[in-house]
Length: 441
Image (cartoon, rainbow, N blue to C red; front, side):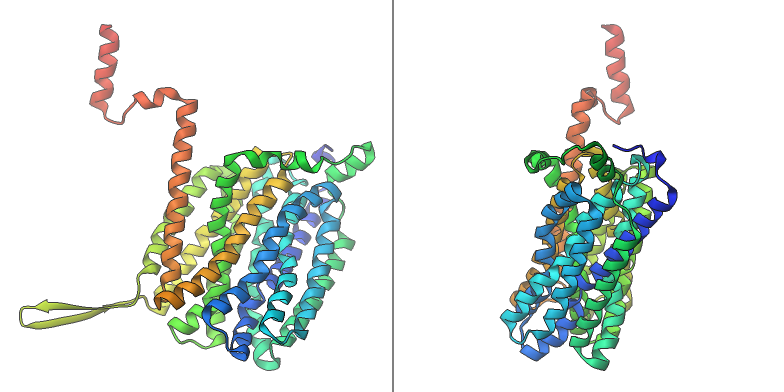
């Protein structure tokens, strides 16, 4: 491995910021159906389940291919692979405008999803430019490219209302192709690839790259990411529809308020990376899951009308979350999810420094699959229960389960490292009694 101290700061910064810009553009394309899907739904007369499948389909492709793209980034260099991913995503987005039937839109959406695979490539590429004590911050900055979701929510409605959904697809496709060319021309190959080429060392074989996936820990990290990223993607796709249905808002207003969730859930990932470097990723994960449990519980409470049998007659009242408190709660939820996204990926280069592409790809794949499965489930829950807040009920169960698994796993590791902890207690009188017995013995 090349000594990172010999790399110029300019090379590092170009790699970081151009990768972040490229990922932002890819994410904007990946989330394009959150806006154009609403007009396509009306055009084709889709129900909520069909709509959920349509907006989630790009996420499926972008998630599954992350494993392979992450490994290829380690083997052939993230610069080359990321540029190729962007060009393929741009071509697929342009071809989307030729779809006419629901099956054709689903097939087109599968190929648009290629752009979502850019994340695992960028993680493998960016992490190689920075030492371990700065990787959390660097990957947090790169991950802030999730803000591409907010870019689509803010700008796509304006273009779609003025020119129709096809123009949105064409503009986004051209933008992605231009960014691909700029990224490739202005960045350099990562240090490890350059050193490997210089020394003639062959890349790590595929089977060896996949070896860490036998560890249960990798799949626990994947569950964390299923919530902090998968649920983020799902809500980023679902919220415009949710706000239009539950609060009867127009598309522009719904897109604007949905951006109030997407922006903090993206930008504050930088803060999450910095906090993970300074305070520890485990502490950040506890904060993330703890606050998310509270937020999803409150958001899950449905609009309810109560009638109490009073002394002098019935007393009726209503409990419901208005638009303003709803926006505040999803803002807070998005903020802490962004911290968690950075904290999860702080773990990976620390535990698996030689398998970042493979492990990061699998964790990213499972997280991305959350973004595929959850919107479909949201739509199905709407159709089955008729309750708008049913999506947050599901998220509450998910994050509560992730918090429980994380806590018990940490406690198990603590007992393994410090077996004496089982004999200790926080009750001082018992501690004193145990100490006295030892003295008498």
